[in-house]
Image (tube, rainbow, N blue to C red; front, side, top):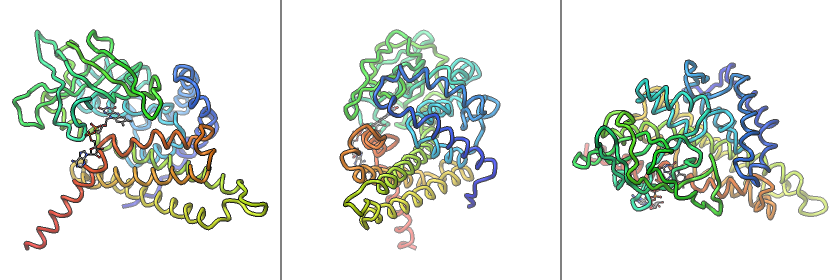
Length: 401
Ligand SMILES: Cc1cc2nc3c(=O)[nH]c(=O)nc-3n(C[C@H](O)[C@H](O)[C@H](O)COP(=O)(O)OP(=O)(O)OC[C@H]3O[C@@H](n4cnc5c(N)ncnc54)[C@H](O)[C@@H]3O)c2cc1C
């Protein structure tokens, strides 16, 4: 494994870091205090600048207007962009659109690509991914109540979802619904593209998450599908392959999230050090002179580095051997990186004292919203159980031989 950063990527990362520092970090107070709709036009201007710099859509292929980076390279970009809230959005690689584009790219028909994927890659529209249900455990996704029945060439969707992130203002949802109830559990559900303007697609509310309902891209919606009729050709990929496609979406998607968390850790460590260097604890001493703070800084640095190497190793494995071979590594990074981030953000907040609890720094928002990292894309416990089972199985095989 060689994680040396190529000259090309060094230039890209320098440009991105400079852009984040100069153009996006100054927007944080606005992001934290104003509705999304007010910030959106400002972000549109920033997006135009990014396109002019040819840094738009780093993940997506060049023939679709992206940069065509590989997974390791893209991971490094996520790290750089996530130092601030709007980085991934302004560079056209925000969740859930990035994941939706990936599956449309792989499974979409030529018509679906033109109609839904092209405007999404170009940043003209947004989308959402609608799988988790109010009344069923998201951690066991084969237990879905939402159904889609083919009637007169149309899918009729009924179900009650929530945590459909970014549904507010999205043009379409990719919905996971049971189409084949008699099939084996992992072949029962399909993915279907549902334009959000379709009658029967009812956004009930943006859920209040940690005290914030949000709006637009940074929001999470509850959706009632009530006889929502979409054309039969909106089936995405083979019928009954919803879970297979979801696994493919989640594998590389975890690299994106985990490297984003490393970016958040880097920012928090930066802020922690700046605060420690300037905040007096006595007339002659600053926080940075306290050994306990020094210990936290050293521990954070080690844990961030360890998590980053684990993630890059996983990205490399996916690239070389595919998602299936990397399954254990994907689970490892998901719970490990989320845990590291939680610890680093918490320490940064503690070092800032009362200031850390305010929205005068980005730390409190990271603290509130990134707690979810231990829940979405697979809860900690399920990932740990899956890793442990594999290790125990291998140990048992050794004992038996
Ligand atoms: C901020 C945020 C954004 C999200 N965005 C989306 C989105 O865009 N689209 C979407 O479809 N979903 C999204 N989700 C939903 C997310 O995927 C689910 O919340 C997640 O899968 C967990 O499902 P659940 O909430 O139903 O928890 P449950 O399945 O009810 O689990 C609750 C708890 O039980 C424990 N647990 C569960 N299973 C086991 C087990 N086998 N062994 C031991 N303990 C266990 C865990 O501690 C777990 O946290 C989002 C969630 C959040 C918080």
